[in-house]
Amino acid sequence: MRIEADPMHQFQLKRMLPLELAGHDISFTNAAMWMAVAVAIIVGLIWFATRDAKLVPTRSQSVVELFYGFVRNTVESTIGHDGMKFFPLIFTLFSFILTLNLIGMSPLAFTVTSHLSITGALAILVFGIVLLVGFSKNGIGFFSRFWPSGAPWWIAWLIALIEFISFLIRPFTLAIRLFANMLAGHTMLKVLASFIPLGLAAGGAGLLAAIGSTVGVVGVTALEFLVAGLQAYVFTILTCIYLSEVVHDPHH
Image 1: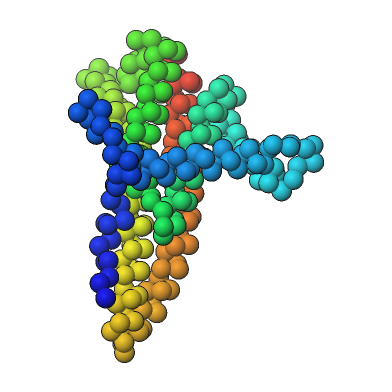
Image 2: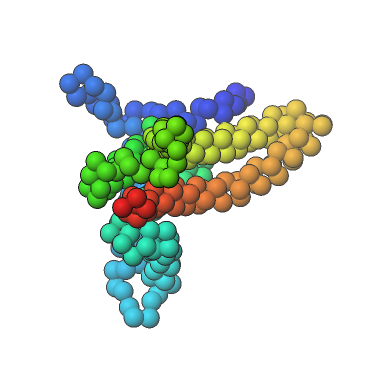
């Protein structure tokens, strides 16, 4: 019996519908399919829970309201009341990333957030909005936020350069953090799971390895569910922090 033990096989992009436009490959892939599924799940659950909203909420309505309140409190506590204009963005990001992470926990699904191209696109979107808000609010004076007021000139330029570089690498760290955590966790799960059939096939001491691997898979799976929620929250809270910095620029 051939056992697929390659832990990276699960991350392969596959063309579901080959398409080409002006010489460019724009095929509908498994990643696009699962992102569409995630959007359908989010819209479907919210519609189902709020289709007949009542003053005394039902269980499903209560869950959605708690979810809404959690994101709202996150935005208000991080950005303030002025940040509520960004609530649709934050709510969409959190819901989308969380749903994709949880979908990826199914052995039959595809972990979209394990691809740097996807997390990178989300990070670039966030960074672009931060720049747009910063320049629309402060104009060219946006760059003054990197200059340390009160510092001697001979050290101020170095601090400004460091601050500017650290600002520019934010989308990279935002993307890599989510991508790396999802990739590492699912790779570990695949490696541990591959030991189970190998141990069972070996027999004898291999059975102990299979049992140990099974326990490991259960433990790592539970941890990965926690990581799925935590990484969605981290991405969201960092987005709020970055927006808060340009909304409440201390230099203006």
